[in-house]
Length: 146
Length: 104
Image 1: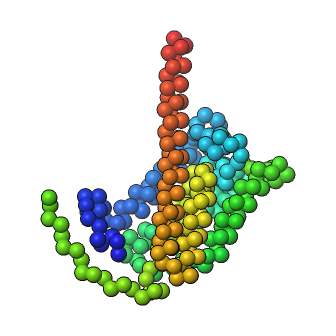
Image 2: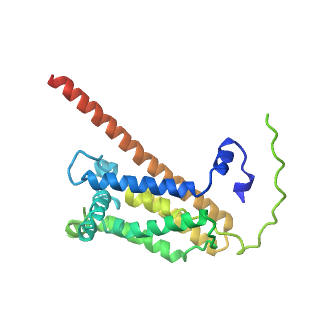
Image 3: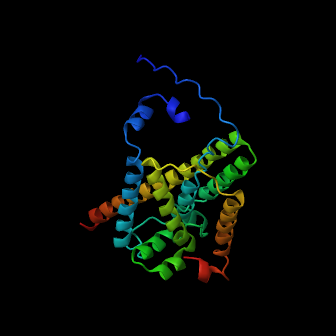
């Protein structure tokens, strides 16, 4: 509803671009990033910045190891990726699926947007928090820390 | 200065339950949390979950507010992440440059 009432240069420019451009550009950027990530090894220090949360607090955040996990995934090493960050491994197919739905929506394949039951999202939240706590406890670190 | 087009005819307010739920922006929240390594993403996940809770309770305005908050926290998180990366690469470039300067 709000889209139809937007005025101004930004909104008009956005309307002039075919909506399919946005998912295509996003997808191309994602693939480009993965190509770089597969070539430039994040296991070797100095190629990428350290996670700012880890640097500031010394604690592993839920995203620590995801760069290395994605690197392993581009080399089809599922076990290695899981060892680095299991949540990233789970997130990748889901993000790919959401991207595909976004692409189809901009191509006119419309499906009514339905929200997941709230408990699904609260479970996601609980899993992320639990994962963050456990991977910083020495007993679980060998399994959950990157 | 330019002529503003006349506003579109008023759209009748859709009945509750018949309107589209807001985008809960969970995708951005997950990207921030998992791929951008900032705890702001966790706040965004909470806000995204609030969208679904409030929507099922019939709180349309609240759901929209939570959706906007989820987007805001995600974008701040991604912005900080990108800024850290940019600063890092600038420091590396400067470091390498000064290293070469000292060597020769």
